[in-house]
Image (tube, rainbow, N blue to C red):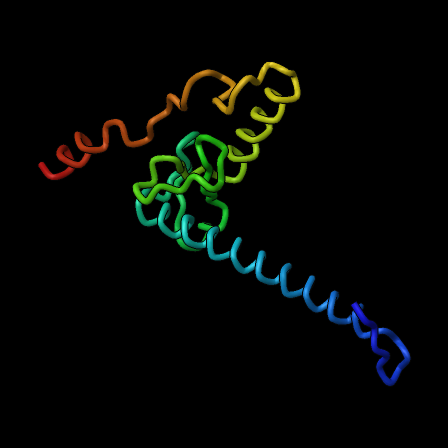
Length: 137
């Protein structure tokens, strides 16, 4: 690659390379933001605004504290039905990832499964239908 000098005496190839790297970084960030907004918005539309672990309810004012967790820890696995997502509050989400990292750090991780070997047992909506029917009468 030939290097031509600009008026400042610097080679222009450095400027071209820097611009190209900046373009690639900007493109990657934009792609990530689109992907993140896409599945977050879909999960918030599909699932209730309640933490699937602790049951904490959210409203528009504190919705930024509700995160979308990928159950299989694969952020590229985003089925439209939301089956790989669960909404978790910041605290439960951090706890889930800490447990996952500790599991892998201990050397006991042989695949990308839940370290506890089970899914969350708390279901904040388990009796919702009965509660709604009782409220109607």
